[in-house]
Length: 302
Ligand SMILES: NC(=O)C1=CN([C@@H]2O[C@H](COP(=O)(O)OP(=O)(O)OC[C@H]3O[C@@H](n4cnc5c(N)ncnc54)[C@H](OP(=O)(O)O)[C@@H]3O)[C@@H](O)[C@H]2O)C=CC1
Ligand SMILES: O=C(O)[C@@H]1CCC=N1
Image (cartoon, rainbow, N blue to C red; front, side):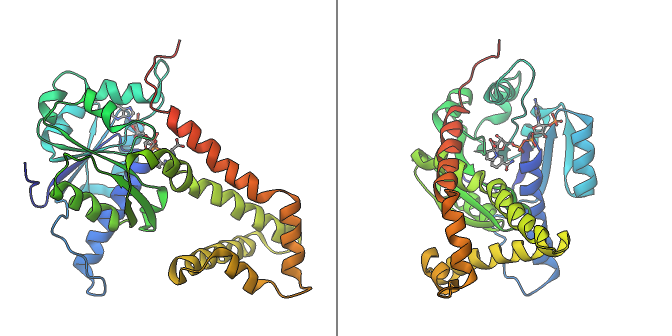
């Protein structure tokens, strides 16, 4: 079934990541209508947004962030799905009796949901939950695309990897590529890579912030005011990352260009190596990937 132009999107479980995605899309649409400096193709731009949550507090957060631009539904997922063309599946909060995917499964299999989901596109950002698991919980006419975005989508600096099964249409693919390109960079990869993607770019902003905080701590230790140290550390990391992305240079080449013989950088680098920073960071991704791969296990907690 072709995707409707300017569809209605329902974010099913609109917490941190749901709000990040909505912020990015709404910001992009605002930029498009108010400036001419950014040319954005709006063919696939959603027209209406619905956010579903389970509690009042979350509902208030969304209303505060988006006022009239997003319709908030509390404890009424079926109504949200009924009104939508596309579902952004983000609901995943841990509850007392269930593991996280169990919550998603419960939502997708609740009374009235199967009818509401007929012939719609579900975009799942659930870490560790596979396309085949989702298909088991959804009506056969519902299409599924898996996406792994990250929180910088909020400021349109995100990294999203999409995994599109064979049966998804060109329109579905184009829609998802459009949405996530407005929020940053997008790549399409085979689903077998999605756990590693989750451990690297999904969780990456948290790991990067630990490195950033530690660098700033070093500056504070040497007498810089905290605010200045944070700015310096963040801009140094951003600058280095942008050099890699813009020039395509290997990070080692950029590192070497900073490292004056007998200078201070090589002294710092050797200290980093003494602390096994490379294997620590690489093992961090290994561990996060392994945990991501187990997040889809649906089982009730005893
Ligand atoms: N945070 C991140 O950086 C990333 C997260 N993800 C994935 O995104 C998903 C969400 O993560 P995150 O946003 O951090 O989680 P949050 O806990 O911030 O958000 C979960 C949301 O789901 C809602 N929810 C819970 N139960 C229900 C229900 N029965 N019906 C409707 N809504 C419900 C919650 O509402 P309420 O509070 O009212 O219960 C909350 O708004 C996870 O699957 C995670 O793997 C993927 C990439 C990055
Ligand atoms: O921590 C998590 O499980 C999720 C997935 C990637 C980022 N946050």
